[in-house]
Image (cartoon, rainbow, N blue to C red; front, side, top):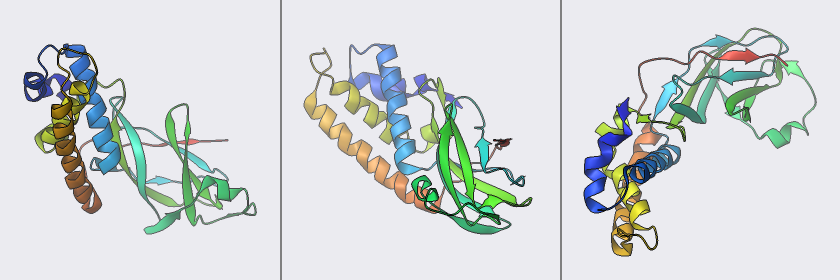
Length: 210
């Protein structure tokens, strides 16, 4: 992890007079948008077993600086199962068996993976998820600085320069940097399609028994 302040040399010279807290927030907001849009920060969740009769499984993040942005894939006993819409479950008959689909919900800010049909046995599950910084993050993943700093810095500059009636307001700069940020996101989406899989610490899910 690297401090958000590490981006200052790439941002502050363009927005003279901007306070550090304001710049820090803009950098964080830009990094969050980049991660949510591109899904480049991915990690495979450790294998866990379903519990018979238990639908929902809570997923924890590697550290409190990150949140799960989206579940990318779920495999059950080595085979990928499809994502389904939670609203559709109401129209399905209640059943137990080997799950063929999953959907996600949030409970107290935790992302929860739910299976349908209700598991009737212990099945091996592997989940790949995309991550993004939380709104309270004070540091960012090293990859965001090493590989994507230009786009994230440009997004922050665009946000700051676009603020009205400030000493550093510059609509032309905001628009120009916005284009650079969009290009960075487009490149990130391409890499996200192929998948930049993070190494390091793994996520240990805990079942939510309901």
